[in-house]
Length: 229
Image (tube, rainbow, N blue to C red):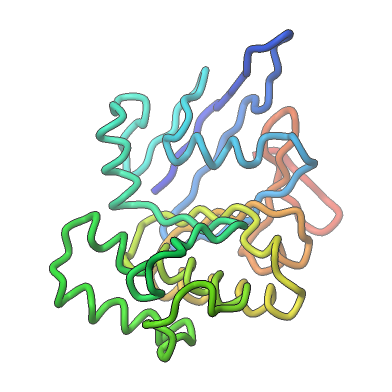
């Protein structure tokens, strides 16, 4: 459902800075991969390009056969709302909305009727272990609970692709393990493809495969061996 070919991105400044070069990637429905690499190598940039939040200088990104370069900003916004879910390190839960209202936002944006939305929100809050917290405000939740809210919000509209950028960076080890297990389970249940960007070996180990982003593209990490893809 995701196909990337020869993707490159360079930023202008006092001198040109290339952060991505010759990246190729294929991701099918249900695939869950982790992307690792040194700081500044372009991991978050890769997610931004896939999400259509930034434009590549060369190469193509296609989601369900649609080349993102052919879409204008409005069409990209619709694509993100319908086909993508996002989980961030900083949670990005809106502090003035209840847990249930936060989770319901993606359904509202794609026009799901209120009655149907309420049922789906209740169901996914149960799935993530927050059935009794729907009326709570974010300030009343722990970091691990807030990340569970973020996962519920990312998946409630049943996206085709989930993008997770260091989702456990603000959590302790126990909470991180629980959140990662939950994220994987929810994606597999929904049949979503997923990309996890992380510096953590433990987090990466929860994915189906681990890719290492280098200056020359992506490599598959298999034990002590790596091969280009």
